[in-house]
Length: 474
Ligand code: GDP
Image (cartoon, rainbow, N blue to C red; front, side, top):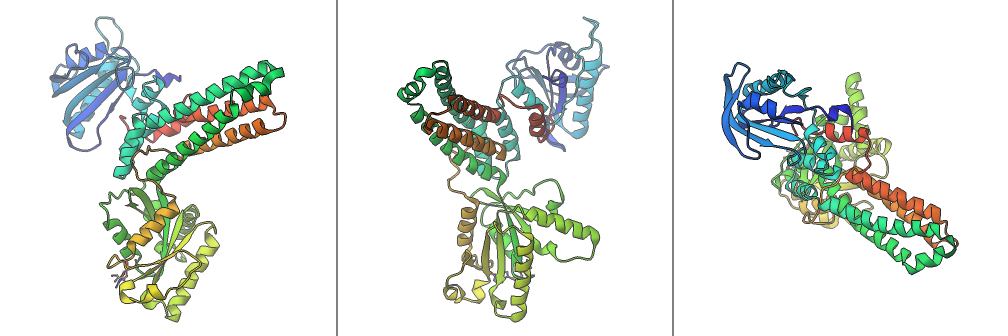
């Protein structure tokens, strides 16, 4: 454990801004002297006490509830003090400063600081402590962040399932089966004469193929869970007035959309998020991607095309009212050219023929098309369901959200690695004269990949990446 994991920490745990209640939270080992200094008394464990929070002169900063959770029965596994004050930014800042000051001040009883080394927590540090102190595993810690960040109800529900350990339990089940098989194989390494017979009798092959089946099912659900969390990226292309914004609004308006822009970088400018059946769709409008003389804008546009290269689908919007006009046809050809030059061929393109209400016979007259396509009216909503189905199909969405747990791309990749090692192991097992040491090694690697999900073996770098994305005070 790094030294910083030993420091006592403090943070405002509630969101910035004004609110009815605001919480300041302290975690560390041995909080008694700090509790005495700030609350002016000792606190009963896990009992709410209404009292004044005092400054160094003994004046009340605010009145509120103090809660004390002695470790290990706390969120972090350390001693935790929670001060629930009035939720104004100034009050909470004062309370935070008071905790830091009281931590550094000398305890008259011992002549030592009340809480040596108390500092403001980094993002996610309380949850990181919970992980390091074995209160939760890494997948559960990630689920906490995912629950807080959930942009749809389905994502929130599945994050909640992961948080209760549903996903971790599946991973542990796989791990136990894997350990069982490893013990079998490792045992045979010690008795090489009978090895093959021994493995056959113990049905190593059957065990391995059961493992592969279970893994496939977990992987399938993890993929769906990752889809709920991460969504898909859809590029929407089409000439001005083809109906891009109208289509976006029609798709967004159909469900009670909790629209959350993806935070960060320049892509904010071109990206909007809507949802279909709870799956987030990050829609990038290509309106901003015209040729430009402006150097800065050109860099931005080049970046946007780089982003688009990672898209999952393109909606190519056409205006049925103008579909026969030579100018319009030429304009569509320009867009098709730009896409062909700048986008990988692997990204599926869906032709969307809009304004069907103005060209009622168009859908029937359409005939066979090489690409998937749909006729619709963004205005009347006719045909929208067809587009939604197509988008979900492209995304690979299969299940209803019940019973799903949230997962991350990191988990899906780890499961893929497990699958690859199990396949190698299966190939070894089936080979004429299998190399049992190689088989044993593949199983060991498979177990390592699995353990990375729950964090049994995880580097400090990985922890840094995961916890730094949390909010402060969590
Ligand atoms: P954008 O420039 O591609 O974003 O196109 P807009 O969404 O702004 O739409 C351009 C015009 O077409 C607006 O006047 C819309 O009201 C109209 N429009 C969009 N979709 C439809 C449709 O399905 N039917 C009809 N009749 N008009 C539409």
